[in-house]
Length: 388
Image 1 (tube, rainbow, N blue to C red):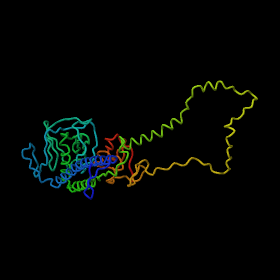
Image 2 (cartoon, rainbow, N blue to C red):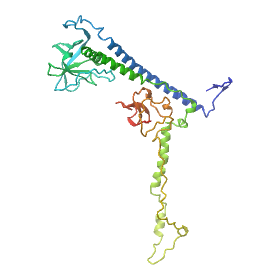
Image 3 (cartoon, rainbow, N blue to C red):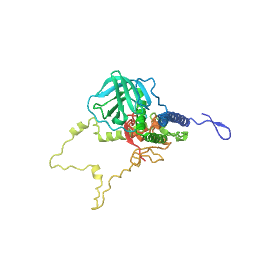
Image 4 (cartoon, rainbow, N blue to C red):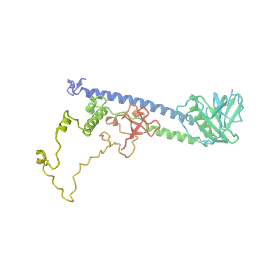
């Protein structure tokens, strides 16, 4: 790799330092790739939140008079949404649903088209959302859920099922929708219910808060790695983990050999058998080695005994040395790590895409998925938290 100095002359790095330039090139490529993936994921989420905010602000302006629908509307009633191929479901047992709220879920969880246990399908048809009620026009008749009579509302987190309880109906019923339309239906139902109780401003405030929180999680552009930052462990396949395993083996093997029984030399048992045992009354002369051993000096009473030196405590509790003060001991969680953290720790490929706090996974990689349900899902599970 040729370089040009300030005088314009060309020079080439020595063979001993070429690996540093290769290390810096690989590090920069990996950091940029991780950053681009995280930036794309962040932007998709940001676009979705802002789309929902605009839809909530303009809600009601796109309402129609219900022309062409096989539904007789009340005077002044407006239609917000209509979807065919919707199934009517009922609970097989009695349940009490939570009261309807204005919580907005921007579709983070993936829904699968399945029917939960204890739910049976009783009809199918066209679902219509108006400013006063939710209606299913099925083959066996019509089912209405008026917003003013709703006492319970629940959305299944894993299936596209929404259950509703009303005052004038004993059995709990609801709708099973196509999986790709469930998120839009739930959002529209929340807006229609909020519009009916004159609380659409609460939904807008919640979306503004979600957008502000998401702005704080925007990934930072990673710092440029330089050849001077390369460590000698980069030359070893596996990096620091390989060196750590080799060092641990170098310490454990001698200890295991020291604690094991000494090997028996050939002929030692024969020599022991040929040695005559001393007879009673015969004096056993001390050997020259025993005679030359100086007598142990008596310890003065009250003087403290000199024990083994105390082991020094690791201030980082196993964490690599770093200028940020990050360790595995304890303190405060890290939600916005320094942009140079991957220069000192082993970061995972999806590092900057995380939205939680800093943790170390079982494979040694660091991620920003602490506090989430999928913490270290791609790295063999959670090992410990990184503190500051």
